[in-house]
Length: 258
Image (cartoon, rainbow, N blue to C red; front, side):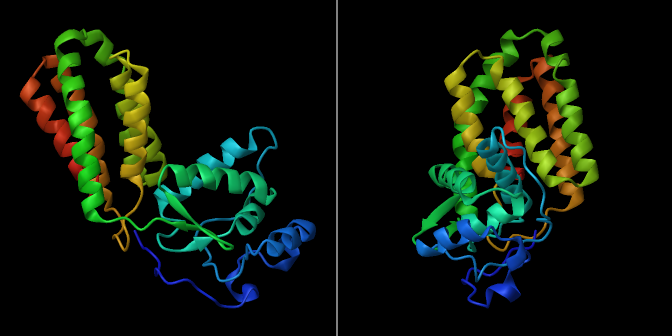
């Protein structure tokens, strides 16, 4: 995955923005600039073509779109993005974008840059390794318990979710793979009947999917191999093979960071 420079760009807005002055909402632009929230100096994000967003649940839609852009590497670690410029991309005002970015800030995906916008967090291999360790500490004991208690028929119900990860991996669609991967793990952990576990595990899972600084693009074969581990895990759970369950989960968390 190609990553951008961590330096803040200060080129003229007309050259750096993929949107142009005509796409701006004048009143909103002046209000934001009055607060010092500039839109110039931002890198054009590949693949971020303008698209309309339905007005209901706008904040939630923007939040999911931004999460997808983070996973896909369209929002570059170290770069600063303003709410007005992103609002232009979605065809909405800066307000729901700013609210969504504030949520991402609480999750650690971005950090607030006063009078400018939000900088995508620069992450390190050590952080990913720590996340993998924490996820294993939480999920491995749960899956081992489930392997001893959940009947084979229940695991069979999760096969379509495992197959969905395989289909996304086969297409090389990292963003959809990330969604399918989380859906599979949520379904497995949901069998434990612990809502707080799902909330914590899903938050850790999301953070583990954000790209590294200057990380290479995920190879197609690696993504396919990662997806195949879901089916292998179901096989081990059905067989109640506890050592294999433990090994697969730990390797899956570690391999997903490569």
